Length: 463
Image 1 (cartoon, rainbow, N blue to C red):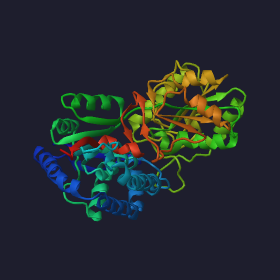
Image 2 (cartoon, rainbow, N blue to C red):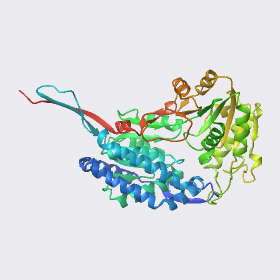
Image 3 (cartoon, rainbow, N blue to C red):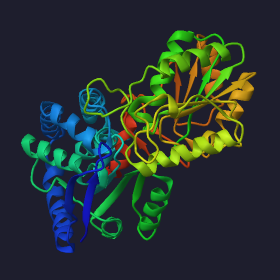
């Protein structure tokens, strides 16, 4: 048992404090989840969906309070806070509800005289979801909703920085009439999580976080034959072609870099620009970046809040300083924003040119408001540089040529390939990554597969 505190990036205060669960409390959570699973499995998909719909409505009814909590917990501007629930959260949950009946239906085998044959998709049991702080509702809804629709029970452990989000989930589930034990939360230590993973009553583990954290989950599951779904690091690239709509591309890529202070798994973290439009692109990108207002996230005028912690901000500052010492040029620097202060989470947007892949800022995940922009001479060069990464979550191309986007996309190692957009998760498409970004899939018709175990029924009906 330990004490967990939310140290607010707004002012460094202790915003909330909780005591982690005792061994007896964790045992009770596991036992209740296991006991509740049979009844939940017997509940129809339509009934499950009705409860989840009420949960979504309960979340939306509390969106103002949720936005304020997010500002205090992880620094997102209060003007942006409602978007997480009212856009992505509800969209993903409701889309998965529309897919559930068809995706979870029995799969019939071809007719064969004297036999009835089909595959049934059975729930894996209890799913442990270990969720991150940066988009605490969006990342977790990807697994919570499809797992529940598939007939599983859920244990949610949220990152310490956003532990109040877990409590919001629990309140919404209770308001929706979720049966006892089907959805539970737990405030727990890393050792507690490892112990739950080792327990035979846990049938699948979902983790979103760092590569190091992913390896820890892998080690914890190594003694058991259970599945994992993991979304880890990223260094998502963008390629700007000469035939793009330049004004649109600048506006969208600036937002794709700096939304949520760059603390998004699918933020653009490096940009490669065709030499023919490079100077114009950089000029427009710089002008728009300078319009950001860095400040207290509780101020409605702020559109760039602090990073989640001073440690995270200092990491990005270290990347920038190292790149500048190696020859990079800060065409937008921290010194241009009065609110940006070394030794605090308040970090202004930084735009670097004259960068290359010898610099960490172009190869190592930054997860902050910094971008390096490189000039390229060809699509071949852009593809080579985009693929020069241990990660592969998303990548984008900005062009008016659909055929070029498709042919180049076939050559880029990534989980999602965008044309003329970025930093968006479409629930109709599978969300996945390759290389050190992780393993497994979420959302789309394929998003139920991780949470079900196929079982074949082979019935000889004529003797």
